[in-house]
Image (cartoon, rainbow, N blue to C red; front, side, top):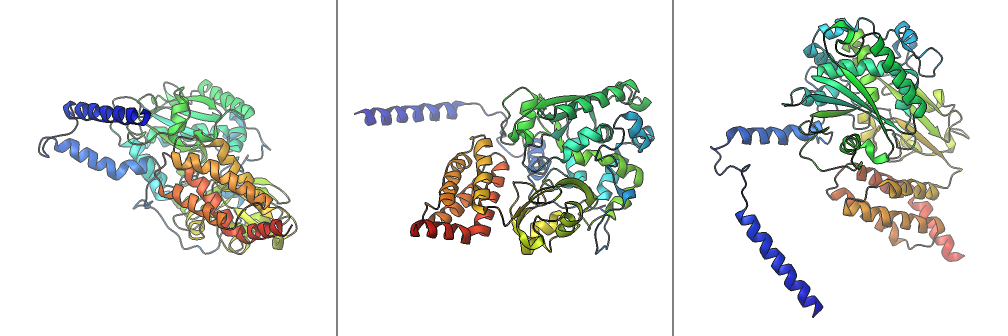
Amino acid sequence: MFQQLIQLQQRLLAAQWKRSWSTAKQPDKPKRASEAPEAQAKAKDRKKTGAISEGVVAQNDPPKSCLTNKKTTFGPLHDCDRVFQNLYGCHDWRITGACKRGDWYRTADLLDKGPDWIMDQVCQSGLRGRGGGGYFSGTKWNFLRTAEANADKVLVMNCAEGEPGTCKDREILRHEPHKLIEGCLLAGFAMGCTRAIIYVRNRFYNEACNLQFALAEAYRHGLLGSSACSTGIRFDILVQRGDRYLCGEETALVKCLMGEIGRPRRRPPFLTEKGYFSHPCLVINAESVAVLPTILRRGPRWWADLGRSYNSGTKLFNISGHVNCPCTVEEEMSMPMRDLIEKHAGGVRGGWDNLLAVFPGGLSTSLINKQVAAEVLMDFECLEAAGSSLGSGALIVVNKQSDPIKVMLRSIQFYEKHTCKQCTYCRDGAIWLPELFDRFVRGEAHPHEIDWTVAIGKKIKDSNPICGLAQGQVNVACSLVDNFRPQIEDRILNCIKA
């Protein structure tokens, strides 16, 4: 009887919903194509360009004016080519020391050349985002620049850095804050913004204090405000803090800035249409902006001659895990991974033959084994061809003394804790995957459960999650199983024998 009542109620609700839908007005949908050609054209353009503006583009084609080179050897980087000359805090980080290193040098002249010139220099240099996606900055920035807006445009800097192994933006905030501030001014002016917001992770207390002090110096010397660098251009910068891993995703970050729960949302509307309090905005990684002043001063050809074509410039790499000297270092793009680890991190503990696997771009990137790590180049396209990605450039080294199955469990538990639980597949995957890996550690599992792990990962990948962070969970789970399947099977067999 109870089930019959439920079915009757569902039928009544369905009929009521159907009547309300048929009588509802839909003014945004034209009856004929001739009635709203402008609206149709705008919707068509949005389909073409909207996805790119949010960093989920399928094809990341370089700008037509992008410069190339014919280099075949890469690294080590010469000291004269380093952008971050105070990366280790050996010199004064305040405005006096920053100006001695070339910051704020004739910034007014760069602004006087206009936004078109700045955007053209960015496109020619082939600068790509340093936050993980690797999208060409000239293409991405152009969407905010050309966006039609009734309100002021806002530039948002992403300094969240909640992913394990990643701490490059922290060093910029701590030792090179004026590079970031000057880069915000130039990038914001090029995109037609009047203000910028720098989102800093809450745990970076000392770094946020240095940034606030540097901002006060910039305002005091007239470099920001109603007439930035005495050019008549108004530009203001605000620092705001938060602390959640999910706020590294751009829509979650903007919601956090607005005082809402930091959870990703679906698009459209895109951030370039409706972003920060309905203002069009664009979220950019801090390193991508901090290198802009140096590119404009030294020219796009200098930047394009570093690294491989379409993977140009320098990059901050974080090297941690089972290495002798964990460090953050600026190096040329496309430098071989083995050279990077051995030259700057003192090599793998126990020697290179003791290497088990490497996370090449943080915990969200797929593992690569020792054979691939010995030959792969540290750039976007080479790592993608190897089945992984550059990510944020955070190398996590794992040697043979560690238990690979415990590494699997610890990695997947991170996503169990930090997923927002909005998407069904991602939420259920965060429940099942840690349980499976926990049984793998104990050996109390069946061999077919290894294939279950791959099936769960494939289901999440083929679903339509709200954000791309679900992909990181899949990358970790599938790559760990691919690399350590023999160890899992041996653990299960030993448990059965015992």
